[in-house]
Amino acid sequence: MEYRKLGNSDLEVSVVGFGAWGIGGAPFWKNEGDEASKSAIAKAADLGVNFFDTAPVYGFGRSEELIGEALKSRRDKVFIATKCGLRWKKERLGAIDKDCSKKSILEEVDLSLKRLQTDVIDLYQVHWPDNKTQAEETMEALLEIQQKGKVRAIGVSNYSAAQMGDCLKFGRIDSLQPEYSLLQRKIEKETVPFCLENNVGIIAYSPLASGVLTGKYDKNTHFKDWRGKGILGEFIGEAFVRNIAKVDRLKEISRTEGKSCAQLAVNWVIRQPGLTCALSGVKNADQVAENLESVGWEPERSNEIDEIFAVASA
Image (cartoon, rainbow, N blue to C red; front, top):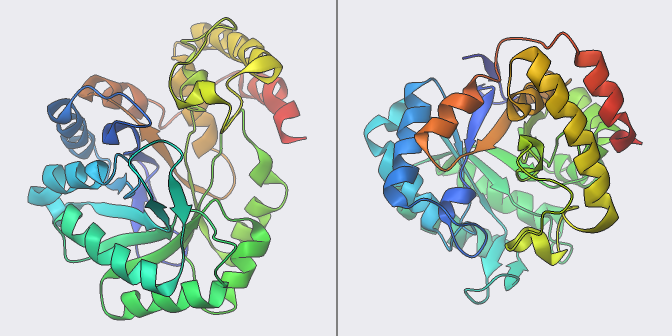
């Protein structure tokens, strides 16, 4: 496993991290049960993954609970990251409020500490920017809980370069967690240069574009989960068909490289400028081992992969 320093923090994290969105289960995903999820977490740690990313909104807190249960016995050997700023109004898809107020953050951090069965959160991130709350108030809350020793490092997720700039007026942020993959490259224009200039580590989520880059789907696929609702990402319509055409070309390259389509996609992400870690979501221990084979090599046809997906950065 390869490890990289996360921004200005003292965290040195594995280049492939464990993304715990899926293990939270409903209403976003179906998982394979708690035991399979905990087995996957343990397998990842055994194979050198030391960075585990979760959030309260994943499965109404269940993802945090599973991370806490599975990692309790090896807490001193891993880094746990979680988030704040998204709160359930009701236990159903879509019923989520953005709240980055100081009051909400001070409540959320204690709830997460309890679910995670830990005294400190290694990286605490604002999940989504809240346009109703000023950056100064959000940063004041984050710096206060950091000073109290409840969190070690501070990060943001889904923030633009301008929004991160607002945060930096009031304190340091160590990381950004954006969506980033061969099919989603919007951050390359402004966000990546900002992070490089300000030493903000980049933790990529959805490096497999929520499964599309695994090569398991075709243009006739109709997703029955959140991906088929048209609320986030390009999983329906002409945009999805265009993406599948690119993935089909990646599958052909994967056969000549002796790697899976997913391994090529994750490998591409971790080779990009400014990237510290790519979060890989898995359902079982076998998928963990497969994903970790993304590390430590460069495909012979890397230039061709860049050409196929270059239009996504336009």
